[in-house]
Image (cartoon, rainbow, N blue to C red; front, side, top):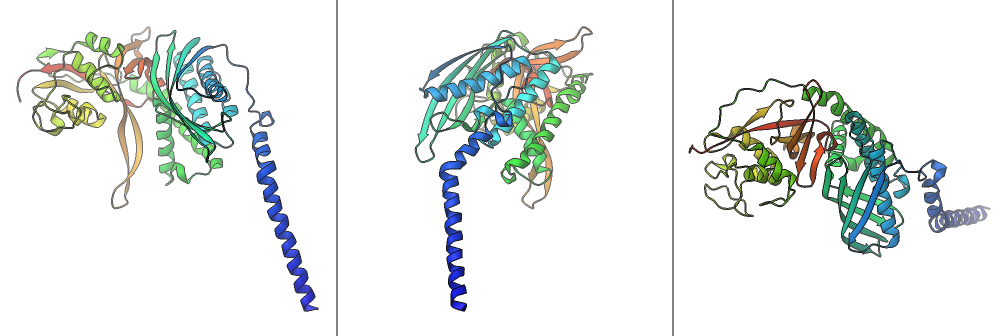
Length: 425
């Protein structure tokens, strides 16, 4: 009797095992793709909608893509900028794979752009988009393509984007976007805000499952909106510039603006700081190799050189915090600058966007740190009928005459450039 029960149990176990294995084989080969496809269809209200009445002209160049890839990426950018221009939240879901975190990031950034555009009245009617594909790498093992490209945009309002970097991972030969990276300042600002919200609770993005992201994304987005609204207006209301010692030579603000508007083509335009440094140098601010370390501001070559000689370059030419320390702390020969109330910026002044982060020292103690996350030069001051400053347009290597709020969260500081001195220290 006992042997029969044992044999029966073994047979039942084998049948269950065969059933379970069979189920997962059928799921993997027959049903999984169908379910994923269903999740990305209009059953979940993510179908493509009619575009806003915004004209988006699109042109591809560079390395060739498959017809499906070009259509996918072209539609992604068309919908994104149609949404930004028409102040409507266009659905990006049809272009992303199931539960892709970058879809959540991009959708949140688009919502923020629409919010600040509506807040500032910065909408546009049309734009020209040029996409230069710099590389396309395929992986048969992963069944995907990694596409690197640079995006340029020009609007009839006059602001433009030049060579903004994007990297897309696309499944198959153009099925869906499974990952997206970009150096777009506003997207980096959002991710920084999200990381800060997570870090305050002891998490990182890697700790989060997809389903938990929405709450933190909404928290970060809400924080950015508050800063762009209340915080930004509060910043622009700062008045009362402190008296500064008059430098020996005045600053040629017109020359600095003209250099900024001419685009990236200077001594070293590989980042936002070197671009603004080149603008100041073109406007007559002399290089300074006389100080010690933070007391230098120079570019004579690619190598970092902190010796008191006309060779290499100083860290302040390419690094935001080092630039700030030099500009504010320098005396004697070279640049004369000072901190400036945020409502008193002028054409030619340097503006740094700020971000918050939770940092941990060697002992494990955590503290909050505020650092410069982006640097640009003011090319216009926008005032209301009362003469109050309500916004700035700024330039950096890849962004020309773009409203400040379309670059970040509204937290910033201004470095007033007064001129320069020729006397030795």
